[in-house]
Length: 635
Image (cartoon, rainbow, N blue to C red; front, side, top):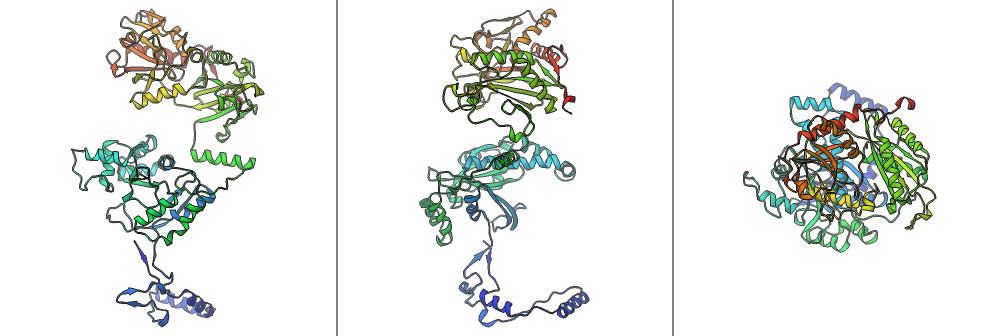
């Protein structure tokens, strides 16, 4: 630590002396100015003895009771503890100021003095801490790429050839999260490298360990969390295992630790015990103990001690908060939104919100559909609107507009967005009302639509899938495109957890059904293109269109036939080619199912031939399928 010893031993006496000193006259100031100009510079130090005001010392020991502070004082290593009190009253806050450290490290990255940003998050826990740390690093990397690319290119040319690639990696890849225990186990298992610093549970990870995790094992940024309590500060929240604390470090390639953070200890007894165990005096931390005992609520975060004063906002303040939240989230690809509640379009992302009492929000009583925007045209909108209204009918939701009106709204929304490539998602809800189960309290249905800018392009690489163990939806729900997507979400998550792209459902009779958000199709070994029957699953608009286009390959002799029928799991896995089919893919090759190759495990030629047919239809097909968006009307 850096100790501060002042030359001012008696602050009160010094203050009186300064008050009694008359200010210098103008002539004295002018004389001093002339002296300095003549000498060029002045380095004069006056040594004097002040008698009683001097700090007394005996045997080399300073009497701190007569010091300016009246006790030992130190340069700050952090302002985070004090700023917690501000978080209690103001919410999310941060400090930015000088910091001093005396760490036993002599690398180029360890400074004795530097400036540091320290955010404190109210109503947050360690998960929030990790989320904001990751988003902040990604924001900085994106900002450098967007605003300082020439500078970064200079760096690449003269200093670090991989700087831009590393910024792109950090800004785009999700950070890997592992516990400290997992990190130590991984490092202990390393056999191809000998570390200079010993690796064992309980030691602080050295820079070489951190870089090995990010550069060799995971090849991306890593967040290590739940460190042993012995190597972390007393204010970090003790976990239930009584061995670790809720702390985390963000590690990045080429650097190592970039950000450190933790969830604060809010429990009074635990805090006192941690201070005592650390061998620290309790008195300097009385203010912190007071917060724990007086203002604690059972919500934790970077600041676990929060005031109970929840603000009540005016309408204008709510709008300001929504705009601030949108700024914090960063730019999103939502270009425009239509809402029947306001009867118009907004281009402000912060105002693209749904009321909490919308029956679709709190009861899931709503349907939706999606259509593609490609090269300034809406593709196959009418087919999607037809299915959309069929889904609404099954869900017992009426439409606030005739289909022609909805069609015009969607076209005008696309024009207002200026989006040339992406999608439009649209919803019908039972409407606003009360929080009852029945929609009888809803006044009228609501219609929403959002334009999402996306770089949609032909997919040429195959993916791996699994058979989903999540129960398939009953046919009466599966055949309508409703917003009850929890089984679909679980099915997708299950696949990702097992290292696959997505999954496929098989019904209780053993027939292949569909994926969580796409239809499937197969090419048998005798070149038959097979689509599962849609009697128990959602009838796909793109799947139907592909069935109309595929006979062109039959005419060329590439396919033998095209049909829609039941297909068993065994027959499907024995196919020579396989693919997902959906609105925004529109065709995605599948090369592996449950770790078994489909055909030769490569993307098939017939799959790509079908994909070419679809893309030709999307980009240059008949005008009945492609609606040109009238952007000029919105100028």
